Amino acid sequence: MPAHRIAVYTFNQFVAPFQSDAIKGFRDAEPGAFAAIENANGFIARSGYDGEEGPESWGLQVFPKCWKNLNGDGWAPSTLSLWDSMEALMAATYHGDHGDAYRQGHKWHIKANEIPEYVLWWVPEGHRPDWSEAVARFENLIAAGPNAQAFSFKQAFAPNGQRIKPDTARMKEFAALNRTLNTSA
Image (tube, rainbow, N blue to C red; front, side, top):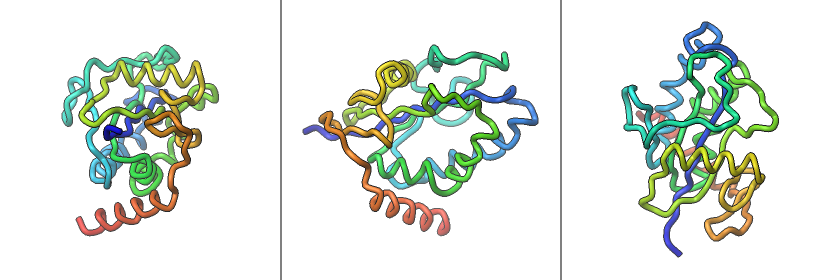
């Protein structure tokens, strides 16, 4: 079986315009959260955004059909990245600086019960998904629920399409390693 990587697309909508005081905590936390992700064990790469410093954008950034530009500023927090394993991604998501920011997301994001916050899918090693592919996977998850092409940590699939459960012990090992890496830097 060829080697695979886990791709993740995250999406939310802000409760207020990006430059507003209501989103200041997000803007302040974002650099540290990105640094924690990029320094995490198992991180491969992430897309940047057109017109911004940092990594190059993986194609033209697009948003899912469910996005309502309620604030009128064209901003919606979204990310696209690649990881060595689901457990490495879980550790970086839920622990450290990114985990701290994640737990504050309710202050900055509109709660939408019918819209997921992220989608996962497997890609062959060497494939870099673009924003259009990511949004298509996200919309697949919304329309069809978790399946082998678009899933979540809670209802995950292996590259061969079999249902799996992430290895939480391995995720904790990654989280501990990330803490060690961040304290020695």
